[in-house]
Image (cartoon, rainbow, N blue to C red):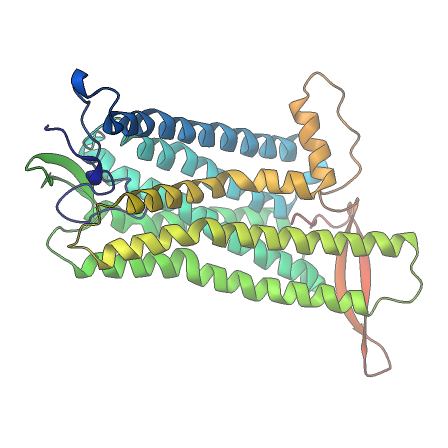
Length: 398
């Protein structure tokens, strides 16, 4: 294949084609190895950065993400007090993140070493399904987790202790089933084709929709944005709005006697609100650029943007989306003292584990539930109901 110029780095071919993760199914956009006389030129330096530095960054993402998520699961498994319904959702979220790290990131990194699609027809059908399934599991689990937190804080009396863990497992499995079913069309439409490149050469690529249909990518990108971002984020925002509203109302309606127990409750609520805000913020911040870039490419399907700025935007969008699969354990580590204690005890294998002080990594052994009780007066008085962790298995996980 003839050497390609650096302006071709951001686009694979004569048409602007890419999957949900821009570039995962692209090919033929890396410059060929420069001749000996070209060594030391800006093109050779840029190629060295692209082929070495960027894949190394991806390897770092995989390593950090797997370490954080695996230790997170180990904390849940080795501490019986943390084997609760909410933590099952957390583990499901971890599973989706790990699948994303093990599929999307390596496949994306491979394009910096190979000029063509190297995973064959089977890989072209299977890999996009796995990738979109992992995204679906992460997004839908986060939505289900927000619903669980809404019920635990706003409507605590609706919680059913009996069979809660089993029912949560059923929900988790259902999330996987729905995610796989929604990703099946990726296998139906994806195909390996030979595409002409800008330098009169050609290369093999895996494309997610028919080459001649310009309407398909537009519909696909909009549906992806709605189903995997906008609608879940809207649902999460509604749940978290009511959560925050309940916490603020309870803070204003607390009795005037502020003892130590009341102060701890207030701190728990503040910590919960902060963690909720961080999770939602990370989700929106990490995924929004990737969705916007995908729609931009889909609505400019027949055009080429060979600029360096577009290549950088593509790389930043991908790295941000991958970072979302790494950040959750470390966000909890920074915001939760209890989780940080258990996390450190797992990393320090040779040291004696810290004694368990909580039934969950955000609260004490008694799960704090908020409920509004109407007094004889017109104004509602919000009290906190403490339900013993042994009699109620539903615990505060977020």
